[in-house]
Length: 249
Ligand SMILES: NC(=O)c1ccc[n+]([C@@H]2O[C@H](COP(=O)([O-])OP(=O)(O)OC[C@H]3O[C@@H](n4cnc5c(N)ncnc54)[C@H](OP(=O)(O)O)[C@@H]3O)[C@@H](O)[C@H]2O)c1
Image (tube, protein in one colour):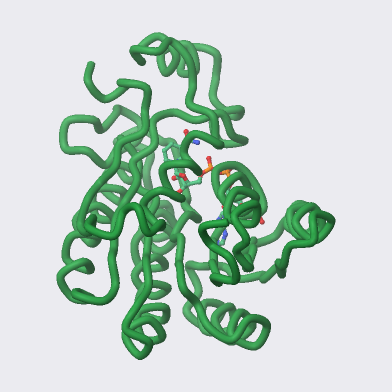
């Protein structure tokens, strides 16, 4: 069990990639704080699954686009588990609109959730980790944040995920040498997010990948677990692309 008694806080862990990541960490012995914004039942289901296997988990409600919620999430996690060894900044927002339709509020939502929320969480975790002289942060970006991979109808999301990638390299410098900071860039992945796409978008996402399928959330979770693990002890400031070759096209 690679993460025996390590404390892992995962934002947006009630569904999708975050959920799979929470279950994977728990299977490796971690104590998991499962953050959600509104879907308490889904978060409770993840927690109950972990507890049913004799693991440790709590559900923590917090909107990562709200600084007060972020503070409370860290207080509740520390009260439950005493420290934080690993932070996974996974919660993200996506408002698919055209260049002409995106409004100020859309920009705020996407930037606050993906970028500023991740930064504020990293700073809270960074304080704890620097005190202890150890810790790992993984930011969930997207292939959309790679410089050549923006897509029409996704301008604000691509900009936000590029910022997450850029922030990752700077955070790695700021928090070195004791805290490692990396990003993962998933390609289109089978979650509620892609389930909401229309048929044409979905079929492009499948056919543009070398593997002709969506990624599974468990595959992204394995990448996140690796970046957080002792096996990745020499890796910081890196962006691990897990996309079945999608971004090569
Ligand atoms: N799926 C893809 O194809 C794909 C590809 C590349 C990157 N990503 C990135 O991977 C991450 C996870 O995506 P996903 O597809 O797994 O999403 P998802 O299935 O739609 O799940 C979203 C999760 O984030 C939580 N959440 C949403 N807004 C939040 C907020 N403001 N504060 C806290 N939690 C919030 C949701 O909580 P509730 O259950 O309470 O709503 C839920 O747990 C995101 O950063 C996304 O941009 C996804």
